[in-house]
Length: 375
Image 1 (cartoon, one colour):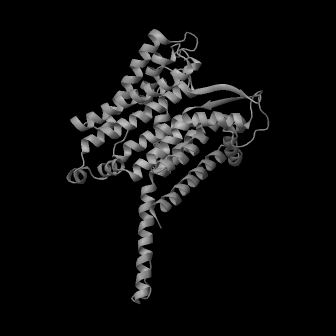
Image 2: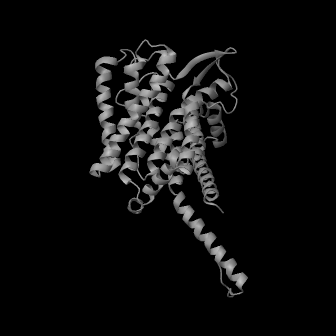
Image 3: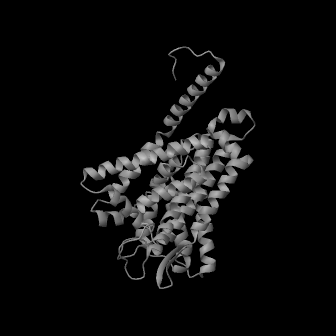
């Protein structure tokens, strides 16, 4: 059995066990877990509701769900690129915030037309995220500062500095958030009327799917992908093999930061149109669960983010229909993260079991198996 087939089998089992555990929690609360899970699908436009508000349908809910999914997809890919080189980028939320804020104040509040503003938002988001990611990588390479420590500290710095500037200059006196950006700069075509229904069309989703397949090609088919993996598995051996470890560490964090920047602009200038001060969104942290569940493989991440965001997006509708607190969705996500973290253990157990079976089969063929011997 190939590694990918084994991991897919274990990942599916992990999700099923997590959903079963979540069902037990829902039963303890006196609710029907099947109805609750169906409500999750309804909230994402993957199942029809009994009735809809004006201008809404199952397909408008689906478009809103894809809009919600896009930042997570970029964030999980960001996590995967860093992990490829053995780095744990826990600063994705901070990098998202930096990219979102810089893009908002430079382009979001400008009077540029949409054909000019939208590409510039993407470009500035990429550059902003790259700058923060490269700084973390440089600290790791030059001063051997653990990337977890430096990225967490930069998260706090970004959170409080940006909060200060929002309150001083960009605050909306009513919402107490930053002022809404212009529609021309927004990466989501908001409330576009098609056939009498109002859709939210995320432009960034196409880029996110493209990024999945580009990274898949880079990881599996290029020298860069090989070098990043070698550095991640054993930096000492990679150095002896002639691979420039420091350059690859900085490069992996730079690419990771660029993807986090795209997550930031598709979140703050896409799904939302403003920034809430002193708040780091959970997307960067939930991306860890998505990356673990998807085995840090781009295609696996596409499937995992689709699943995780069903739980996140559908939780509000589940809460209103099933009478459950929306935090139940966080419990289920946490259970999936916990089960995914145990995947390596289950892989090891499965490998040992398969190896024992192969050994037993070999002994049988050689006629050397002893009576009573077992796997």
